Length: 95
Image (cartoon, rainbow, N blue to C red; front, side):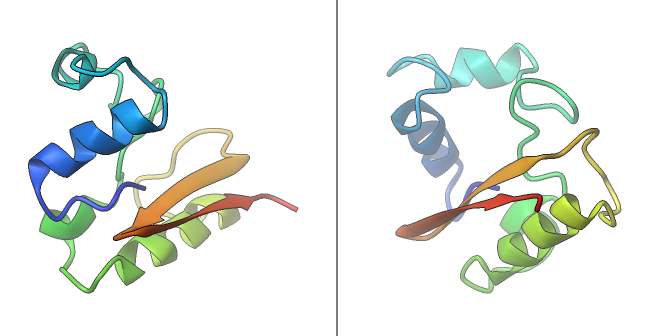
């Protein structure tokens, strides 16, 4: 769940978090690595564009739904969710 207030921010997050090397985020996304049930199921709720721009709170809600298994676009076998909301972040895990 990456805070996507600008498209380029998603690329910055992917590179900074080590999902791909610097400068490779555009190709990483184009190759389908961020599709549902792939390497990084990126914002299955549609992110800020798909829901609302409420400073990342919708991403927190989606992260909880994914962990609970109640999300509309549920990712298979979710154990952990990495969440960034603006300048903060968290990792949620199934207990």
